[in-house]
Every structure is written in C-alpha cells, then in structure tokens.
Image (cartoon, rainbow, N blue to C red; front, side, top):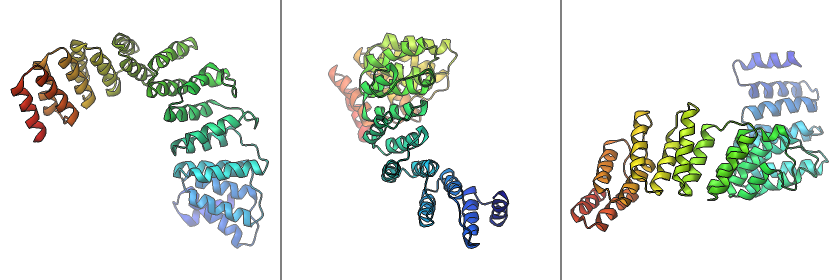
Length: 350
C-alpha cells in the first residue's frame, strides 16, 4: 500500500495529502481491484485533515456502492470533516446512522459532533449528545467537557456549566484527568459572566485554586469582568494586582474590564490611573476603556477631565461612538454647562 501511495504522490507532485489519497484510491479502482474499508477510511481521513468535507462524502458514497461497511473510524473522520464546513445537519445524520448501525460512538466522535453543533448554534443538540453518553457507555474526556462548556456559554446554561465542575449532574462523574483542565474552568466562568451570574463566576476561582490549578490571563480577565458586572471594583483591582504578582502583562480585555469595574463603582481617579498605566504598557485604549473612564468622571462631576479624555480619544486611533458623545453631552447638560454640551453635540453632527 505504501508503494502505491508513493507512486500516486509522484504523479501529483507537491499536491496536498488529500489529493494524493484520492489519486491513489482512483488508481486502485482503475486497476479493477477492490478498495478495502481501511483504504476508504485512510482517504476520508486525509480529506478531513485537508478540510475537504465534500470529497469526504463523495468517498463515503463510493464506499457504500462498493459494499464496504463503515466503521467507527469512518464516521469519526466524516463527522470531523463536517466541523470545518459547519455542516451540522450532516453531523446529525451521521450520528444517527451510527446508532442505527449499532456502532457505539467513542469520545472522539462525540467531541467532533458537539463542536460542530455548538459552532453552528445548535447547542441544544450538543447537550442532547452529552446526555446520551452514559447510555452509550461512552466515557467523556476533557475535550468533551470543553465542548459542553462551550454550548453552555452560548446558551447561558450557567447552572449546567457549574454542574460540570461540581460533579452533581446526573449523567457524569468527573475524574482527576477531566477536572484538571483550566480551559473548562475558564469556559464555566465565561458562561456565568454571560448569564449575568457574577457571584457564581467569582465562586469558581476558589474551586480552581483548591485543585492546585493556576489561573491564566483568560481566567483573571473573566473574573475581573464578573466583578465589573457586580460593581465589585475592589475585587476587580485585587485580581488585577494578582496578575502583576504572576508577572502577567494585562491585555486590553483585562484593562477594559478593570476600568469598567472602577467606572461602575464611581472610582474616577482609579480609572484614570488604569488608563495611564495602560498607555505606559503599550496597550491601546479602546472605546470601552475611554467610555468607562469618562462615565466615572462624569458621575463625580469632573467635567473638565471628561473633556480632556474626549480630546485624548479624538487624538487617538479610536473614534468616539454615538453613545460616548451622548453621555458627555448629557453630563454637561445636567450641570447646565450649555456651551460645552452644544460643542459636543456639534462634534457629533460633524
């Protein structure tokens, strides 16, 4: 077999592996030999790796016409190929076909299927497959829980997401190899944040630390964001300080979340310090960071600072949006600074 593929590779020159594989299989068929299930699986797998889902399904049709019986490897490669094209309807058909053929999907097949379904916004089908895994005697792995956590995040199923960590969900029993994944914890935190459950998001951090896991920059940014939602600016600054202890360089997302937390807490001086620090660390402020700082200063009636920030924003690569102009004009109107309010309004019209 290797000689045949080498010959096909020579004919195809520097073609990608999936083209070489198709040429090899075509050569076998032209010689009136009968490609085996293993040969078809190899070619379908090459198409999966080359993100050629259409060719993978053509091979699948030819495989059935040749009376070759698909196995778990066949379905795994086909479902994997669907992920690149987000062909979730094909995934549903293949998964159902596997079950009809009395083939037990392994964790790899389930993970491929759930990833495609989640990316296609079919999160309810992802959770359906996850719920079936115990009856299929399929043991979940870390990638399984990552896929389910992603579905929970998109659907704001924060309670189910927390169950992934606590182990109380009826369908799963977490073991050490599964829970020791920071990716799953990050997904669960993000799920709680998206659902507005900031206290539950923050409560995940102690669980993570108790398992001797180290938070990442993503973890800390998500916790800071949770603090911002809950107006817990002190907690946000504490996590921000912990990031420095870990020698992490906060990114724009982390700064934006911290500024938002301080802004909501009306800590205008702290927002200015964070904005200044952000510039010193070569992190470009965005509309969120400028807006948070301006709203904090407006709440404290520091309108001169608000105007300075607006001028800084105009001098930067970030252009103020309608909301920022409206907030600034409203703040000046509220304090009866009519001239400044009209000036801001004229900038918006321009």
